[in-house]
Each structure stands twice: as structure tokens, then as C-alpha cells.
Image (cartoon, rainbow, N blue to C red; front, side, top):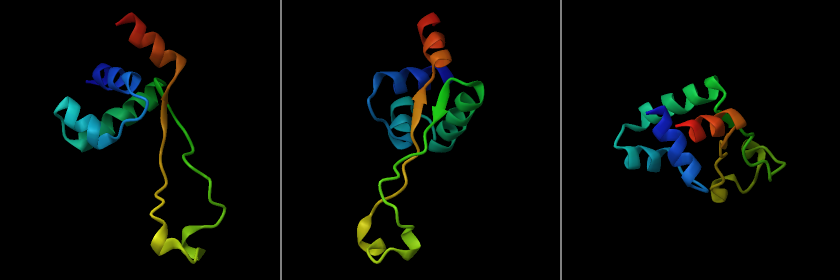
Length: 87
């Protein structure tokens, strides 16, 4: 399943855990575990997400209207791309 995850991520500009779970026919929890394994193996790298807002949500007067959820980004590393190319 790890290879399938890498291939789906590689083929998409953006993909969510929910969409990955639907495409692969697996529970979202299993997808989360697979992504964590790929990070540990060095095939995916975690990004810091969006930091466009300088104010912490708890102190922001617009927090209830914003809808801005922090986004965790993952990118395929060089090692991950080499793995995809070999398989």
C-alpha cells in the first residue's frame, strides 16, 4: 500500500487523506499510518503548512469567521522519487 500511496501523491498536484482513502479503498486511519511510515522512511517530507496569518487564532477577532485550518503539506523527497522510478 505504501507504493500505491506514493504513486497517488505523485500523480496529483493536491490530494487529501479523505480522497486518498476513497481512491485506494482503505480507511482514512490506515492512510494516515501509511503517510507517517513514508515520512519515517524518508520518502515524504512534511512542510510547515500555511503561515500566511501572523495572529494566533485564539487572539484573532475574526477566528469564528475565518475557516482557515492549518494545512499539513507533504512532498515527495528525492528518495521517494527514486523509489517510484524503480517500481
